[in-house]
Figure 1: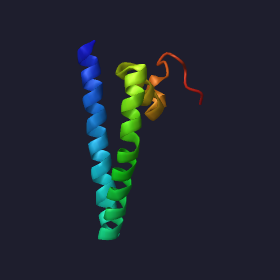
Figure 2: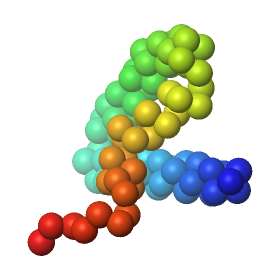
Figure 3: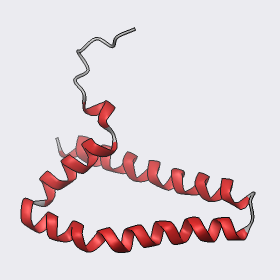
Figure 4: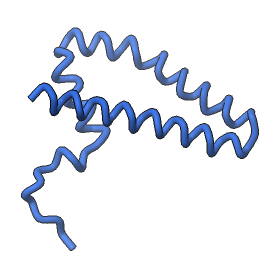
Length: 87
């Protein structure tokens, strides 16, 4: 079971890295100011939410917080796979 979790976590991290690379690549077409604005926005949100995330993780447990955050970030894969998709 650990290998499944590890594979999912690595895929999630790789997807985040590709997203940031593509975001900066697209912003670079609009100049350095756009790249700086995006970099500042990412750094600002991380610095604001990181202390609260640590407190929430200490209060509810890191495992539960990770499951809830992953489910909120990617709601479609959490849905049961056996349920038919409406046309």
